[in-house]
Length: 208
Image (cartoon, rainbow, N blue to C red):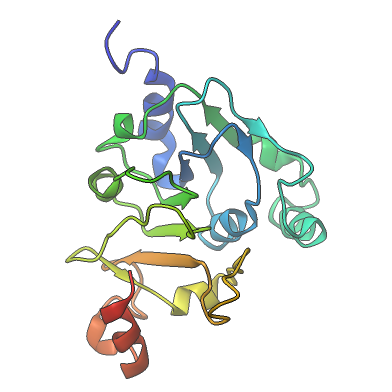
């Protein structure tokens, strides 16, 4: 069997719908704590949520799928015009799928949540050309280094989409335990480093 033969459903789906999809790379067996994912999905007005992992099965952990169940129910109720359960009809999970299988397949946004050590997906992510890349729950996990000509860290869009960190590091109370990258040609607020505040430029030079 060819390497990507079993994984073709994920590639096929994203080739058709990637431009309106947020993709969680290496999502694990249990989908949990996806509040920020939904905030991005709603903020970007996307239609689909996709989770991929090499695990043999993927499903929601309904006890911990949200950090703020009431807030997320309100967000989804508003987003789906009174029918929050429509989200699960728009969610697609593809177990048995390598992240590397998605190289060159475009999507609107990418999430990397608790990436295992030594998992380097920078080239795959850049080839997918997402507008935004969210990395969260970073302590003890692999950080993808996307700094370069195409992506810059953004703090303004963390505020714009009201992203909220979980499991912050108590040693440094200001550490948000998340990183948001923006494709340089997405939006016009801070895609040029010269337009960033001097403080954000200093942080950007040391972090990420």
